[in-house]
Image 1 (spheres, helix red, strand yellow):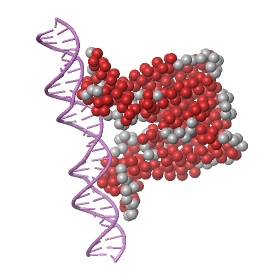
Image 2: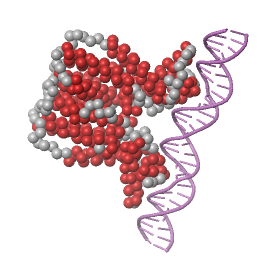
Image 3: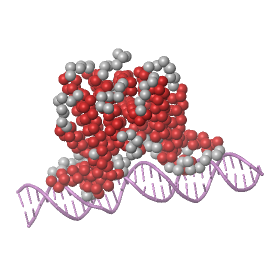
Image 4: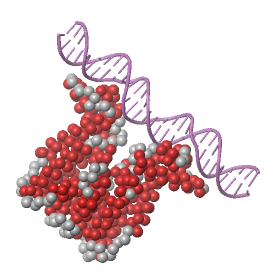
Length: 202
Length: 202
DNA sequence: ATTGAATGCGAATACATATTCGCATTATGG
DNA sequence: CCATAATGCGAATATGTATTCGCATTCAAT
């Protein structure tokens, strides 16, 4: 951030700009999100935008920070039934994921699609860490011990498989496959993988 | 294609332009691939480019066609050991996938990363169809019958999970996880999912 | 109220890129 | 060899976008 907003008015403007960025992304896509549009959408001039953000990327970063915060908060409020078995836990997480992708008019969807050219990694990190920790807790509790490294590999595979399969499912407008079926399939696949044995070849 | 290239010289130019497009993508990324650069890289003027391609997208489409063709040919030559078990089959496919992603200086990697804004779906279709057919054959042969729809869901999940997990693995430059471990993990997950039962909840 | 700092503005600047068009060059068929 | 069509060229055009800068407005402290 180029300058700290000291007065109330300017802090509001910074917020409005970040919100406008999100709105433009949902409305015009990442490619159609230009600085003039963001400014107009926020009801602010382009010049003001550059008072507080050194460039367009800084805006996306700020949006990323904010979303990471939001997601972290949403995750904390997710109830974690103590008694739940692995299938229900994973199923719940996946349904939560689909909700997020369909929420906010596809904002997250568009951001994840463009993951490789956006400074939005923080959001992904929050998710990754959360589920890694969750898995650690679960497996400790159930006395199933994997070597740490193996757990990291498994979480990497599970997280990316789930996330991008969901993104692809939500992206195809013609509902070829039912979301519920995909959710159920993913759940089964993951539960089998996480709960099962290490496999024949090692 | 705007005009048919009738003479040998022009047919060569069309090929050179498509090759140049691929080269620019590997060298500068999808975003840095501009029409002037493509033309220069092909040793041809911009004007000539537009003689045969109505716009930049048409070039990407043509590249997609060509790659789809190449991939289809590579797939046909993949040996399919009759005796192989599911684990080896899937493992082979995944190792083939990693090879493709690392081949051609990351051309496929970059294309898949940008899947949502490129007219390159044909390549994915070729892969999808190939593996769907393969799976059908395998399951018929082994007398395990799923309802067709369920097979489609499973292949959708398996294909996307694999593809994007591999892309993510190859994308992270710092080799946090070893490619072999990820390949093995993916294989185990998929074999468990495809070979296992339908799951408790249906 | 006054003054200096903070804030806000948006036309103007500086690129960059896609695409066109009139003209030059080259091939083909007679 | 000639005439005509096909091909090739690249400067020029049109458009869009990021970013700046000098000036106007508002705020906050005295």
